[in-house]
Image (tube, rainbow, N blue to C red):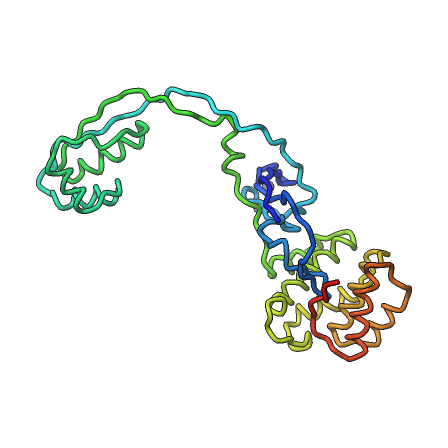
Length: 296
Ligand SMILES: [Zn+2]
């Protein structure tokens, strides 16, 4: 499992760029998956979230609908830029305060700051004219004397648009945000609603994927229970995989007869049949907890 280069996705509302992770290589060999469809790998930071919130306009958007901005190769060009050289000429009477300023602003140790003050005048460095002016003003406010000298410096500059390079990572909405989106009808198509609810299902089961003892859905929050009722009954797709997950949801809700009925609607093709048999066995034993699938 190797992370790939980030891609840049545009917010579907305002077009603001966001960085999204990609996987360079991924194989499922030896990856632990669970009866609720959750897999321990790839880790979530390596995959984009289903829904994100734009860092610019603060609207939510489906990540899969986001347009991918074309990645340009990073080119660098040499540029000449104006800088201001600052020299500390005299510390003045507030020597201790100036020493602290050297430590705070320039990261000098107390010993190094003392050496600077003992060896004045000392060139402190070069900054952009605005930065240099701010720094000089700080020293002058303490009664120190500084001199400024303008010069030019050659720098290497990336030609990729700045807003792409510095684009924020895609935000992952929390449980409360997802619930609010559902209430507001953010997921129009049944399959999208189901996928959004599946995220909530996984969030609710997350402690159990990490080894916490099973807690019945009846003892969880009202929102978690209500969500599961829809997950178990919303026929968002005709696929066998979707039917298997609905059966699993019924089982986790302790509706074991309903779970078995959904499983028995039609035979499952391989390799789903192996998972279906496992879920069927758990339902027959009246076991509701989410389980790690046995590795084939
Ligand atoms: Zn936006």
